[in-house]
Length: 56
Image 1 (cartoon, rainbow, N blue to C red):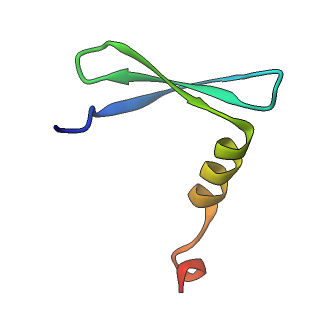
Image 2: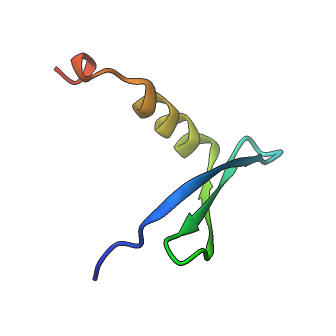
């Protein structure tokens, strides 16, 4: 099964529990929500700002 390709539409909804909903669009324009708990949000944020040197 092929993964669904989605693009972030630059909207993030911050939840009261510390999590977030990252709003995306599928290639056909269908809205997709990536729901992240507080822990997953932190992990994603850290991995996005990590440099390649951090992995070595």
